[in-house]
Amino acid sequence: MADEIMRITGGTPVRGETTVQGAKNSVLPIMAAAMLCQGETVLTNVPQLSDVYAASRILNRLGAHCTPDGHTVTINAADICRAEIPDADMRAMRSTIMFMGPLLGRMRQCTLTRPGGCALGARPINLHLDAMEKMGVIIRCTGEQIVCTADKLHGARIPLAFPSVGVTENVIMAAVLAEGETVLTNAAREPEIADLAGYLNRCGAKIRGAGEGTIVIEGVPQLHAAEYRIMPDRIAAMTWLCAAAASRGSITLRDVRTGDLENCLDLLRRAGCKLGECDGTLFLDAGGVLRSIREIVTMPYPGFPTDAQALLMAVLATAHGTSVFDETIFEDRYKHAGELVRMGADIRIKGTAAVVEGVHCLHGAYVEAMDLRGGAALAVAAAGAEGQTVLHGLHHIDRGYDHFAEVFNSLGIRTERMVISTSSRGKTSA
Image 1: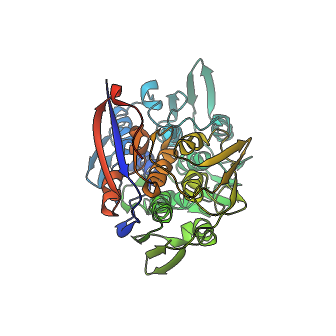
Image 2 (image 1 turned 90 degrees about the vertical axis):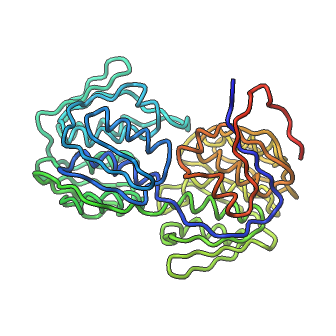
Image 3 (image 1 turned 180 degrees about the vertical axis):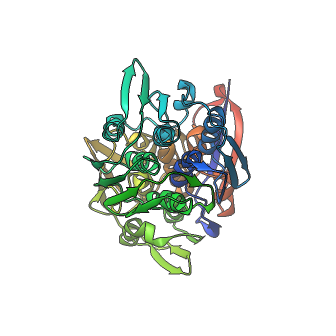
């Protein structure tokens, strides 16, 4: 059997610049929303990700014509004729539940199963189902299948028990073609929500308040297609910043929206990094001694994002002092910690808390990505570690990063991607 790996040689400070890719968490719901529109949607600044290709396959199996070409995706949904997503496609990525809202908006029915993707903990799919029921959807669960039908969709007042990004997106996409007004309270406020609304409003939707706690959607009879540029990926930006910090280097990021990263940038400053901004370009210098941060709590936006928790942990593993993380979003998001320990980190997990005692340096090791951001964090740690790190589980990283190895090489981090026999696994030299 064969396995694809990245071999990363650390110990050299990052020096370089890169342009931030389009946002994974923005393009996927926008691709799903395109099935609501009449005509041809053209999306630009689309990252080349396995999740984008998975979403494209789902759209084509539903009857749409979706064509990725470089960093552009063209979608014509005129011939959509099916409303069932096979289980194999549902398991391909965590965010497949996002097709529920637009399928109900377009077809007034959908059949799907529980989504796959990274195993980060329980998926509160009941929040999606409860919201759809308030809009007139009848739901039957038979085994693994979830069958949703609606004679018509109507507006509703929907208070969310938790500001879920996925539920907020599904409600928006179902409500834009529903009859009447939908008022969503305690909505997710992530920038990607505003990007989805920006696309739909350009297509003729009437959405107010996206990016705030209350969103009002006034249903319209139909939507037209449009061209739309996907926003920059704030978590990819944080990844490259953390690689520079972990290696005690410096980096210039182009096409970055610093307003979306305020909480992350504040924590990097507290750790001792120097940052500057000019006209959408961000500069970071981490040449000095890094300091620990006593308390880092993951929270819904605008708080510190759970997607950046593993990345910052990789940086603070070699900071002076003790850092304490509290993961409040997912109950199973410390899988990377054990792999960092293999690299010499001193990390103890106590329930939702991770206590990180800074060590002098990390060393290369054979490690495995267990999920998308955890895998990126291991690569970040490898950038600052002594010796070579061999990283397995690249299919997780491919879900969210456009040509990860090439970006690392452009920043001066020697990175080789290769296929090896699984029998070749063993200890690497430090």
